[in-house]
Amino acid sequence: MRKLGFSKQIMLLLMSLVIICTVLTEVISYSMTSKLNNNLVMNNLQTLTESTYNLIDSSVNASIKNHLRAIAEKNKNIVELYYEKFMTGELSELEAKQAVESILKSQSIGETGYIYIVDSTGVLIEHPVLKGVNISSYDFIQRQIDKKDGYMEYLWKNPEDEIARDKVLYMTYFEPWDYIISISSYKSEFINLVNTNDFKDNILSVTIGKTGYMHVMNSSGNLIIHPKQEGVSIYNYTDTEGNYFIQEIIQKKNGSITYPWKNPGEEGYKDKIVIYKYYEPMDWYLCSGVYIDEIIEPIEQMKKRLFTVFCFIFSLSALIALIYSRIILYPIKQLIKATEKVIGGEFDVRIKSNRNDEIGELTKIFNDMIYRIKNYMEELKISNSQLEEINTTLEKKVKDRTRQLELLSNQDGLTGLFNRRKLDEYLEQAWIKSLEYKEPLAIVMIDIDHFKGYNDTYGHPAGDDCLKMVARTIKEMLRKEIDFVARYGGEEFLAVLKNTDQDTALSLAEQVRKGIEDLKIPHSASKISNYVTISIGVCTLNRFANNDLKTFIELTDEALYKAKTEGRNQVKVHNY
Image (cartoon, rainbow, N blue to C red; front, side):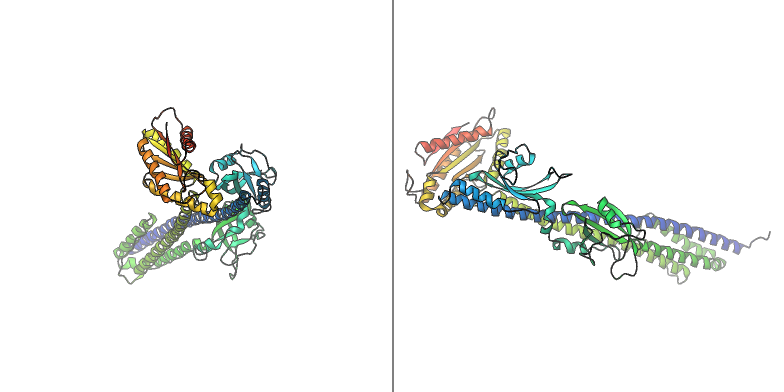
């Protein structure tokens, strides 16, 4: 057997090493980068779908809540109008209530929704079917009785329904008749309220890969939001094997699927991977998709480049081995080390080379490949950041609107003071804190003397102005940073004085009484003065065992009753 010369051995060895190293590098790099790329794309699709789901859900909830609130306020105004007709004698109370019930019964909410009235005992005053029935055993009715005003969501299942569905409700309370006016319907029936323009641009602005995008369709296969085919029905689309892949999405509701797709203007069908999530209230499917060949395009490009590198090295290795083996071995070792770093996840790799030969070309191709992979990953990161920023901005808007609505729900519409609901909440907290820290607590209950006579004499608009002046004066006379004052109902007000003993409470109450008297608001119908006056009941909590809040309030009311029965325009006190 003829022996090989040294140069041929070097050539053979070098070529063998080149082949082995290059193939190994190609296989490992392709495998690792392919897996990394696919994971990044799938995670990005999943994140985009979840973020868009939250974006749409926030917008839908805000639209429905505002719509129901507007209907509730309108119908409360109708009830108030007929109550005024009753109060002025234009209608009897029965006639006024029958007129209100007729108007409410004539309205429909969504497709199956309606307006009903329930009182504080859980009896249906007005209902399309169950009028007069006590339904206080239902949890959501108990929540209505406790809350009386505001927005609620709950699950409901009619006898003919197979499963329970999300139902929404907005209620407002009319105290004179103890009416909890409730506007209710299934959440899914408000799809027409949702303005897709609120989030359409945000969805369409998202790009995935080169031509990937997000779209929204309903269970009928109609494209609600789509960059090119909005309004088109794709329900009966099939793939090349006859599978109804759109119907499969609709049936499974959540998951991922691969199917052939062709956008308008494209030459042929290409496999597309889509992650989808079902948004039940609007019967929508949120889909994020991209062509598979766009996912693997960077990998295929890398594969071609690696193959080109392999061919260059294989063709030139023999000549380079004959000239100087060390010259070729050194840069190859550099390339192998750099490749290992890339496989380990380090993409800030760049090989410096001043060579103008094939090794220099190989280094340039390698650097370009790593640069492209790095840029691709950064683009994915930027896309995620932009979507997060959009979501954060929407969340802030929703929170700001929520705070505004909460403030309005806690205020009395006429006087600007806190309302009865906020008072109950605050008083409960103050009571618990007083018992826990054994701090004195005082309640001041205020009633305008002979206010009905004032309304009868000067009219309700003047009565409203009087209430506003009295409310403003009470608030000014009390300690702004410490004391809490609210409209208790009608012409009654209630102040909660935390960490306040009896002497201080009496002093403040007398100060308020005199402040109202000094306003000198004319009151010719008063039996005790020519001006508007007030009677005040005060109760202070000085013992912290064997007591309860209800009794505390009742004692305050007894003190007010004593002040009224003993001549009015005075302050009476009760200890507890």
